Length: 286
Image (cartoon, rainbow, N blue to C red):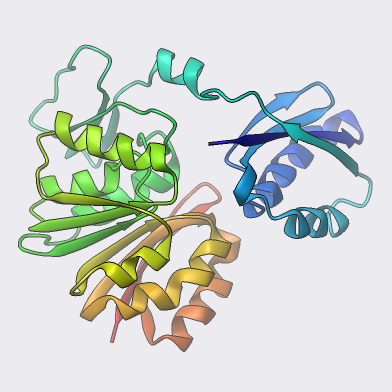
């Protein structure tokens, strides 16, 4: 994949810089950016060449909510390499969810699982290790469901962590998809190391679901707000009667907008979780 790197120069008072960085990362994330790092002048972001929505980016900067902050940016092709390599090499500490699931770095020695169900993740250019609030909330929501014999869809599967968790909780079959080919390969790899044999992984966006037969009892989506708004109708069309949609990847402030769209599609809120500013919604199809 080809990436672009953008350097955002943020001119503001020192005490405003971190808040401004967070807001720039939020609006850039809506424009397709995947990862960020702080710089002395502001923040640097990375986006796949084909994923950049420059109109959204420029609009977000023009409407920036901090009047005393001035933002400019430059963008150029990035060196073609794995920008997560250093993070992947250092790995992550075990993540425990509700004392029932322990998510472990597959590169590290196996920890004491203390009768919890282990999930081993070898992250390679893909999102989803359990260290982020959104992943943990969806795994926690899954633990509240009876997945025995259910068919599950993992939208934007990343490392495959959510689909793998669903399989280990009793799902009879899981389908995952991701627009990133590396994520598809990483999910397949993580299925192998977790001995999950009932998860099929597809390459593409939500349009790939037109090639999937049947409907799903549970749909999982840890994706940013704008993609969720765009794809909600597609998700609804492949949900069985009474099926659940568990989604995160957005802020608590985004809930009213998402619920308005869900109501149009006859998806009713049946639960929610929050962790800091992040949120997770559970919606049921009537």
